[in-house]
Every structure is written in C-alpha cells, then in structure tokens.
Image (tube, helix red, strand yellow):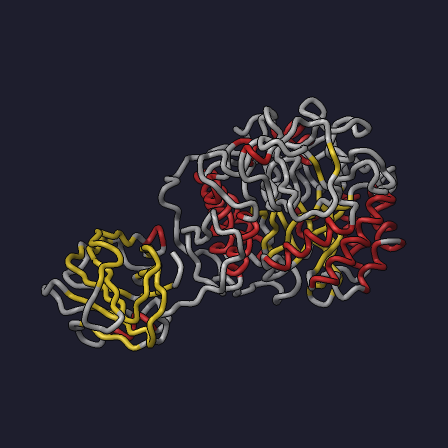
Length: 570
C-alpha cells in the first residue's frame, strides 16, 4: 500500500508546526484582509484559460477497494491498515466517514453499527458506479477537472491503477468533466527511468480522449513530490529536471506539485531545486497540514503565497495554489469558514487556477466529497467526527457546494467576497447568483455635485453616490423593476478610501410608498482591510423598491455608497 503524503510529511519532514510557521504572527481571524493583490479574478498573467488555468481542479485518489469488487490488488485497499482484514476501529486508515446514500453497492465492515443502528458499510472506488457518482457530483457542483493520482504503477498497485484510469476516463466523458494524470513519486525508487516510460507506453493513450485535460493545446500531466525534504523522495535535482524536460519534450503541459517553501528552499523543501521548479509550466505548492486556523491561512497569504505568485509571474509560470476544506478530524473546518478563507485568499491573490486537496481523501479528513452529517451516520463509539462536530449542522454535500461557489468566484460569476455565501444546510446546489440592482433605476433624497445615485448600480467601484453634506438623514433607493425576493445587500465604498462607519437602515416596499424595515438601523464599518465592503442579510422578503437611509458617517458628513448589490437569498 502506498505511503500517504501525510504519513511521510508528518513523520519525516514536518516535525512540529513551528518550522513551517517560522516568524508567524497571528492576524485577527475575525477581520480577514480584503485588499486585492496581484491580478483580479480572470485576469491571467501567464497562460490563457484552458482546462486548468481559470478552473477548479480537484485531487482524486480513487484508491479504495473492498473484497468482492474485482480489483486486482485485493482486500480493503486504503480502508484498512491490514488490507486483508476488514476495517474496524483498531484496523483503519480513515479519520472521516463517507455519506453512502448515493451508492448502489456498498460493503459490510467490522465497525460497530452506525449511531442510528444501520450497518457500517463502505464503498469501493473500483466499482464503476462509484466513479460515475463522483463525477456526477463534480458535474452538479461545477468542478471542472479531476487530477487522478497515480503512485508507482510498477508494483502491485499497477493493474488497479491502470483500471482506475479507464474508469475515470469513462466517467469524465459521460459527464463533460476533464481529467489528467498526476504522478506521485513518493517511494518510487526507480522514478527517473520508469515515470516517462509509463506515460509513453500506457497513460498517453488516454490523452486522445476528449475528456483529457489540455492547457495551451497540450495534454496536462502533473508530477507531485520533487524537492520535498524527506526520505520518501530522495531524488537529486538533476534526476528531477531530467524527468520534467523529457515530459515537456513529449509536448506535454507539466505541472509540479511542489513543497510549500519551494521558492525559498527551506523547511519542507530541499535547497538547490529552484531550477527544477522553474522548469514546470505550472506550480502547485502543497498546503495540507500547514495550518488549521484562519490566522494561519492569512499568514501564508501574506508571507508565502504573495511572493510565490510574483515569482511565477516573473518567470511566466502559471500558479495553482492548493486550497483545502481543513482537517475534519482536528476540528479545523469551522463549518466552512476555513475553506472559504482558503478560496478567498487565493482568488484575491490572482492565482491562475486552484487545486482542491482533496476530493475523496477520507484518510486525512480533508475530503470535499459527501460526508456523514451527524453522529447518527458514523459508527457508534468510533470517535469519528461528523460534519456537525462544532455544533452546526451541515448537509452531506456542503463542501461540494462551497467548491461550487468558490469556482464561480474564481471565474468572476459572483463578486469577490471574504464572507462565505454558502449556507450549511441547503441540500441542493445553489441557484445562479444575480445582482438584482445592477443597472436599475435609482433615486435619492439629494446628491452633491455629480455624485448621482445611479453611480451606486453602474458596476464601477470607483464611481459613487454622495448625498448633500451636513444634512442627515439622507436616502438612496433602487427600483428593481418588478417585485422580487430580496434577502441580502452588499454595500461598498471605493477600495482606496479610508475606514469609516455609516449608520443606516434598509427598508423594502412593493409600491414605493409603504416601506417595511428589512435590516434595522445599524452602524456598519467600511474597512479597506475588508475591501470597504459590508454585507447585510435578512429573512428573504418580497420588494420592488429597496431604500437605504443614512443617519451618520464618521468619515464624511454625508451618505456615501459606490456599490449597492441586492441578492435574492441571504
């Protein structure tokens, strides 16, 4: 059985978290930075949009098997430490439990029954129906591309890995998803002589599929593990560079799954590998296990990711940082806030694409695939945490839905926001998000000079409405054109302005004369550290006219607003 990335990194390279967070000074977790560095979403500095640039990719293990499923490797592959014995609390490799309701075939285990009395069963990745189900989820939740993990295929895993590639290809073709091969060189002693040969003699045949990912017209392949400072990947820089160059000579677009500190050659990265890293077309640094807090994500954004992006831009390399939902088993997820911060930070950075780690990694607890919701759906007494581990109920598909919203934010289909828009409890994919106020008719109690109310709905963050000065209260109103359901307002000031607090009330009306309070009078702080953006939510209500009434402003004696966005859902 292949050594997992976590096992090698934790035991050999990471030690304590201190070396990886050297110099880390926590920031406020409650107030995420909001300045947009690098290029805005969609503004690609390297390659144009393709199947990995401008897209959400997910790491797909596809490595679970069960006795009776026909997998050549046999046994409970990746479910049990001793794969020839059924998984149980004392013989397991997993820390999270899948939600199995969408699978037509599951296998009994030696775990106690679930909390609600049902038998504890697990799925097999080798069943085509399982792979088809996973790729239908990807289709439903807007996941563009799957990176199929491929460990050393020369050993006993080879036939099973080969078959899984065909199963993934079939599912991708049926659902309109893309996939590519992602080689993991962990423990692969003869990697230099065998990896390129494996591509040429086996995997290249799949590049003819319309579902095989291409970037810049070239088939995509990834090599994960060069340069890591651990015993599982002892390869010298020259050997690694040789493999990269040979793959490129075959006309491939080559991604490097590299250490977190690749650019500096310290902590988890060996020194002397910079030429190897710069030889890749795209760089995707690893982040699993690096932090479990919002402060930590912000620290990496400021101290690592920002300089990574600049280095890639300077060398014409596409940047595909790792985003992750957090380790469920350690309580890092914060019912979605950790994942959203990870997505938000990398999108505001201007990353060319995103790599989600991982889709089905129940072994490390960082899976986004459907997961047990409550203690009723995990084996009784097992200690395995369900999605509601912090007291907030989350639907089994919650992290797929967050991925959907993150993908739309990456593509500019919803506004860049530090505030997670995904509700934990909706069991269906969210509807398309439409700004109901954009371009609609506006009016105001007054305005000064040329700062007319229409500026607040023109989509230009630099233009703004400003009321008459020293004459509170003041109001601005938008006519949605027809009665609509309204549940959320996003209010902005020009991003370069200094911080200020405006006291305002939001009201709605169906006829333009009788108004009902939607959001009570509140002092709302516009802070450049949060992109001068505030969000107000309320129970979705029918309204055609929405009016904001301003009664105070600590920054200027007038009501001010550069953007007024209205959405149907809270």
